[in-house]
Amino acid sequence: MRLIHTSDWHLGRSFHGVGLLGAQGRYLDHLVDVVRQEQIDAVLVSGDIYDRALPSPDTVALLDDAVVRLLDAGAAVILSSGNHDSATRLGFASRVLERAGLHIRTTLESVGTPVTLGDTHVYPIPFLEPSLVADELGCQDRTHAAVLRAVMSRVTTDQRSRGGQSVVMAHAFVTGATTSESERDISVGGMGAVPVEVFDGVDYVALGHLHGAQQPREHVRYSGSPVAMSFSETGHVKGSWLVDLDGAEPSFTFVEAPVERQLHRLRGNLDDLLAGPTYAPAETGWCQVTLTDPVRPLGAMERVRSRFPHTLQLLFDGPTDQIAARSYAQRTRGRSDIDVCCDFLEHVREGAPASDEEREVFASALAESTVARRRRDDEGEVGDVSVGRSGVA
Image 1: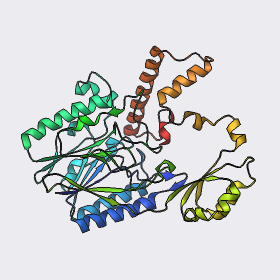
Image 2: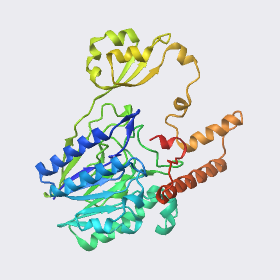
Image 3: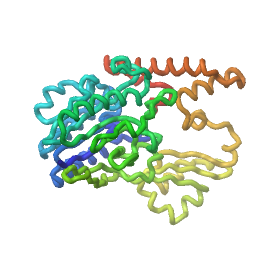
Image 4: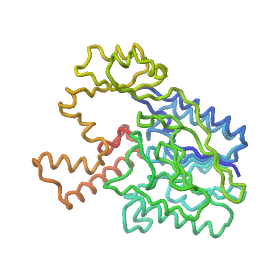
């Protein structure tokens, strides 16, 4: 059994105002070619198929075309929903489509029922909001770890009755993995982390959510996003995992994806950047440029783009800027939503920090806001309602 594990396509995403649909389409062309050349049996896409709950018609058409070509290439296609997807929209007509080889899993009810391919059983676990499903699963804690423990109990019970090999697809933040700036925070008050031990007992775990390819354990892997979506992903090697389950132990091959433009982070004095020969490779790439001049140069972006025409972000970090107050984005970077709320409360109270009880009130309010957004997405209201800063991802 040969599988391709991919995730986090985020179809319809833009990168600092530049649409990525063309680059995403070229990745899907590449994926179809790999399926044909490597005689892949199934394509596993572990969540965040779309970037928004209400994707544009062009985005839907791109997915439709890709799925048809993957099926024509001879592979089954298994999609599970992520935190960016509308479970209701993505799952529409899933029972009918399953007859054609397209398996879409978006609901709690589907968890524990595998897609069986020969003697391999694939268990897709869609992203499950703890506030919505914890009670139904009998979880005492409303955390992602508690929810995934409960659904993995269903999976292992079913697997024991079937035998063969087992593969789990999940969309989660597993402890020990590395994040980037382009992922939407799925935690509230630190309740999003899932111990890797939750996935013990299966042959392979195909994870989604984090955008860098990595492996918290040998059999537990993130494919990462196939296209970069933030400058924090500079240096990432994008691609998919080819998983071969035919031997005694699974074997893994990373298949690199085509790169639309390389990412470059440049830092220095403007004159040095414009003249330095070491910066030549950045002339054709997407650039984030940080200028360290003591005084902000006039017409800085125009001058930067005279050499680096694909500069998307221009930052300043000279002595004057270090003295000046930091921007809101800089002050909140790396802070969780609940920490931002508590920081604000401390600010308006002139230094009095939030108490444990107040943190609990914020955590409850943020959880309710997350649930409201997901319900809005599924009920079809227009607009992207987000929690705190997490909506930027």
